[in-house]
Length: 232
Figure (spheres, rainbow, N blue to C red):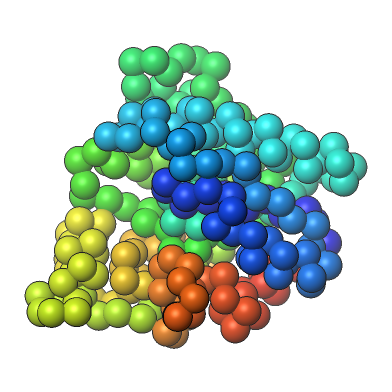
């Protein structure tokens, strides 16, 4: 089994993914999570540069390659972690903010076998997020690197509508893809969670974030539906 690195979602810390990490390890997949804390995201607020997060991703990937004497690993990105993974794969400088320079390039495409995204909003209409996501989609559209396996998993749990109980989903979907009426995981609509050219999967009854009272991407029953994508 190839080693796997979990990329947390926006404003999330590594501790939020402990159970997911342990579940993958129990299936024989050497796994670690990028050791982020909530505070590590503060410099990125308001659509600012995510270079500080990408550097931590790279350090974690390099550590896993060395520790397991592997040539390649798999990335599992939850929510924003998925599009951060797409930047990490790239071989062109991430220079979309004043403080970024030509050194902001990671060429992870040489080290990654599979990028698996869970509830990732691969598009956005939100003005703070668009600078980063426009860079991703204009520079590396779709399943960009043919040597990498792209797997995009979407949850189908909440239909967005302008009515009580569905208003949050409606607003989030509309902010993400421009259309609020549709299915998604309560935060990311199915339409935005998939990429052209990727293996696109829809999981019924799966919500966006971990909560003890509902099924999310890291729940055992959901993991069983996508874990085979990480296996030879």
